[in-house]
Image (cartoon, rainbow, N blue to C red; front, side, top):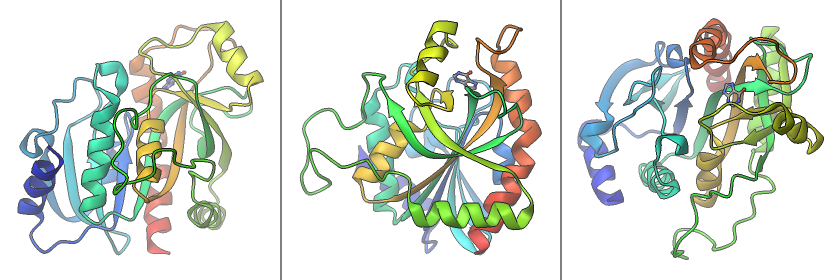
Length: 266
Ligand code: HPA
């Protein structure tokens, strides 16, 4: 499977050698707008499954951004769609074989901190995976990565420093915090978000952690940023919807686009 994915992508890339993977979260597809000399490869052409969620397109965009050769995943796979965690591992293996060294993951997330309001950007500095799901379950191939990988430094400190510096130079407020991964698809109960806060989380969301675990396993460096789209259920007074997530993410996507562009130029 993985070899097929790699060959199908290589066939379209030609001589182009990608270095950085950008994973685009819900409502954030504007991130791909500034990519130059685009090669657009629909996921179905690669052999990846169909995307089933509104606001996610389902194409891989290759090109240059901020002087770097990038691949942008315009649309990602979520476990709540019924995809197996192994798909995420295979996908990240594919990118590693294509030469990707760094991964910038983005997502939409709910805030567990009152002062981190919708529209805020939060750099993920750590995560909590109590989901019971892991992309690395199954037989391990020791040639690919260790059976028991250390993910205690999953978010690369050099990339984080570069992001901090870039945000500061641009006058963009960049919160930092721990991301709590839930499978979804339901938004959380009040008791759940209270519990996550007590456990030390700052934001909650339904993506990114599987990709990060697999990226670390395959030896890629990771940075991740959440766009805060809502307050958690125990703080906010109205019903949460996916439409609100998309709307709020689109509002902040331009800030995030600027930040990532400048970050890549560094
Ligand atoms: N919970 C989980 N996932 C989310 C949220 C949330 O409040 N907002 C955006 N994605």
